[in-house]
Every structure is written in C-alpha cells, then in structure tokens.
Length: 282
Ligand code: PDD
Image (cartoon, rainbow, N blue to C red; front, side, top):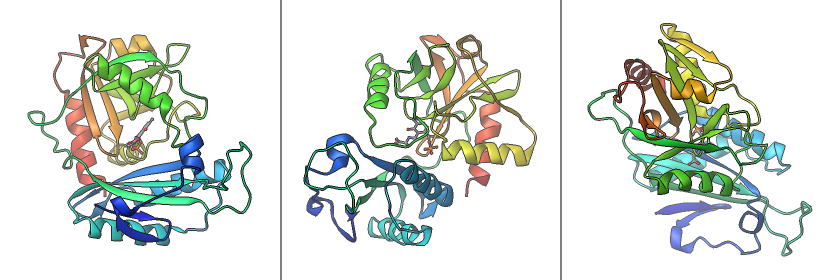
C-alpha cells in the first residue's frame, strides 16, 4: 500500500523512521482513525478537530490546517484505490537523537498516515450484522482517556483480556463499578427503550461515531437518549448493549460476561438507531 510520511507518499516498505522517534520510545503522539466508504469520509472535520485538540493538550506544535489534512487524506484514499478504508493518522513529537523525558524544542513532529481495509458499511439488518460478545474488567488505564494518545498499552491489554476469553471486546468499569467505555469503542445500554451512555469526561474518549450518532438521534427525536453514569447493575440488566467506533459503526452486543443480553438477539432499538446512522452519517 501507499503511505504518507512527513511530506511525501511512498510504498509502505520505503517508509522509515528513526528508532529514536519519541513515538517509538514513549508512545508520545496522537492518532486518529477516519472511516471512508467508497471515497466518502465519515466525520472528517470532527476527527481532525479532535486530533488538533489532542496535539494542543500534549504540546505538539504542528501548523497543518484542515485543508492540508484533507488533501493528504483524499490523496491517500485515491492512491489506495478507494473502497472501504480506515485512514490512520499519526503525529508523534519527533526525534532529537536523545531519550530524555523533557519535550525537545524545535523538533519537527513525525507525521505518518496509512490506509487499511475495513468492513463494508453496516447495513441495518438483524440477519447479517456482526454481533459482539464482551466481558468486563476494571478500567486500569490512565486518567487522561479523553486524549487519543498513541500509547495504547492499557487499551491493548484490556482488549486482549476479552480476546483470550473468546470475546471481541471488553467493557471497562471504574473503581465505583461505573461503565466507562470499551477497550477500543464507546459503550451504550438500552433499557425500556431509553438509550444511555456515560458522559464525556477524562475517563473516556470522545468518540466521533458517538458524536455523530447522538446528533442524529437528537435531530430525529424518536428515541430517548441520556448521557449519565451507568452502573454495572444496569449493564447486567440491560435490554440491549451497543458499541460504537469508526470501524464498527453501531454494533450490537448479544452476550455480556457469559450471559445473554436481553433475549440474546439483536434488539429493535439497535435496528432503529443503525438505520438512522446509516442514513445520516455523511
Ligand atoms: N478506536 N474509545 C476508545 C478507547 C477508542 O479507541 C475508540 C476508537 C473509540 C471510538 O471512537 P471513534 O468513534 O472516534 O472511532 C472509543 C479506534 C477506531 C482505534 O483505536 O482503532
């Protein structure tokens, strides 16, 4: 595949960075994943805005505006043949030839972007949609989960916990047994027709799929949505559980900690929500 590194496009095999890059040594960087279906990007502007906020929060100075990012992303899609692609963007603090904790001055950030295949856009159809089995664990990541940091070891370890138990995601709960999110997705429950998702704070990533979905649901107005604390007890007794992320869209969970969710089948509220999301996401 063709990738972008710093200022040019090249075959992935030719993309080389220094092992002294702080992204490699410290996980010192910010990333994004933007979905693109048949060259149509979902949430491009909010994805770039979140990345710029992340860079600001960790003090990486990069003078790229949204048009510059759009130019690179659109070229990357074109050079990789369109189709259904996730666009990965990564900015690390760069490399000053040392390993010192202090932020170096006057060092150019390393900018890397590549495209990878993602599943076709979800069709709101209960008979063909991929379902998820999840288990749960205490959220042992850091207290800055709102920053989309490339340092993902905490997330990776949580994902792996579920994976080794035969699950395809792990729901995370803080020390008060309140739901935060999943290892690589935001999380929702549905009870008696009401959709509830944890509020945005430092315990979760402000997902762009979450942002777009909540916006669509608010405009539509037919489903009730609450952003508030969700307890373990509520998750255990939910009629439906969903996950969202850029590659999953709205994904139904049918098993939680070895027990079926609701009647063990994809729920009707999911069907309505994914139908609205499919129609409104661009
Ligand atoms: N994951 N929470 C976490 C911890 C995530 O890593 C992600 C995304 C989300 C959902 O965010 P969004 O809707 O903006 O994709 C929530 C990406 C896709 C990843 O790391 O591959």
